[in-house]
Amino acid sequence: MTDRKAQLAANLAQVEERITSACAAAGRKREDVTLIVVTKTYPASDVRMLRELGVRHVAENRDQDAAPKAAACADLSLMWHFVGQLQTNKVRSVTSYADVVQSVDRIKLVTALSAAAVRAERELGCLIQVALDAESGERGGVAPDGIEELAAAVDAAEGLRLDGLMTVAPLAGPFAGRQRAAFDRLMEIATRLRAGHPAATMVSAGMSADLEDAVAAGATHVRVGTAVLGVRPGLG
Image (cartoon, rainbow, N blue to C red; front, side):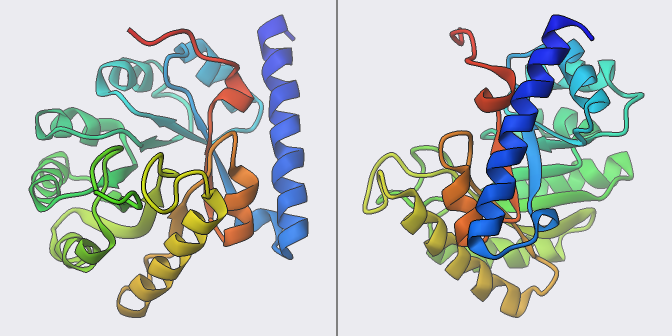
């Protein structure tokens, strides 16, 4: 085993222990929480090693990095999640490799994703990104009162599948520094969404620093980058 693969294996084991402990503390089954490894800024070689170590779900946030990486790993059995703010001019590319787009936050994007999915003859999973800061938009997302309209649009769109909700712990507003409260609020919104959309069961929340809070609140997916891959180099 190479030094890098050994490092990734050790980091994965630590993250696995954290998730397992958080599930036990919350009275949840470990299999109820899916780990998504955020591989942004890291090379395709790391993605290959992660797959060999049992990782199946990976995430990227910039199409210019994700598209070539997904192509280089096309022979692997992976689920690709796109988690960054998505401009409509990148939709066609993202739809060619992503299995799930976790950052759906406006009708215009739903329309573009639907057209691209139909063209590519693919079904694309969609999560509505919920903004829990005082003003929607600082880290992307739609305010809670706009979720139902977007959910209905995704549900009606050809080529798209409404899978659930995603959020990023807010840096401003009433939930700033209160990750558990933010994730509890997301779960309340998710419960309401499922009343009208029973298949929208996915709740993506929590990252390296706050995955325990997300698991405690009821998240079904956690997005972990730094704790698995290490501290990222500065982004240009």
